[in-house]
Length: 321
Image 1 (cartoon, rainbow, N blue to C red):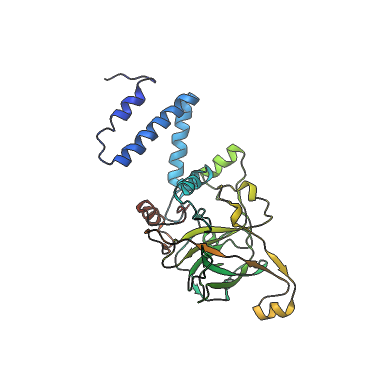
Image 2: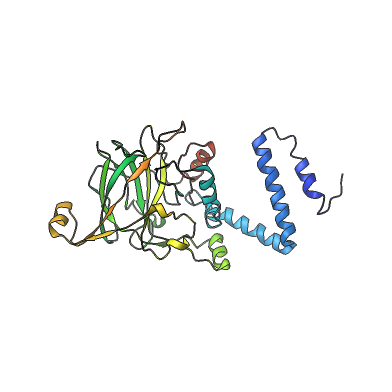
């Protein structure tokens, strides 16, 4: 058949996929063709609109480089990233819930022991906070020597990687033999997703806001347990109900408590008054997938995505805009 119309074209395109050897690939491509054609029919897509879409997707690709993945940022704001996390990472009973990795994870952060100071080298001061808690199994047993990869935005809501400076407010924290961890930091601030590219233009055109609620990133891992990639959000943040990337979960919202005790502040090496955050991470037993933290040098976003496709990550999708 040589001549097609809107009623026969979809079936013809799908038919040409019949010899695809990879069954899963054939399934995905068949569904993609059917949904794309159905979308065009539903909105009666004009040629002008189609070309605007082509220009937009081209601009999205052109905005990508080794440090930024605009395509995944697009996936974030459309909710697709969280949909993939929800589909693929069901939380075991009692375990800490997973959410998106976010765009600002990087390899090479300093390793810290209990009580360390992640404020070292910070170029901007914030509200001082003592963060402490335990890494536990789902049945409440402490996990000795677990690791926490921690990172967050600076006091102005900007990450170190966005300014090209040295690492700030990030580190790989080791729990002690009792599964306890603690470190000094600053209280996180809410911030804007990158708005200087085509995805920013899309967000502005839709009238949606571009803010993420304040949060601390964490990857909790230990041998024999499933790694979890998660956030700890700040209770009371004005953007909890409108996260630009749909990543908030009620179980991940924490209260920061103000402490006015000069003696305790001196003992902890903090100014008085200060804040305290107590947060426990709970890990489920491993299920045969690779569970150790896998990290990448700044500039290896494409390798991170390749490993995601290979299925090595556990706990959340890998997002590296």
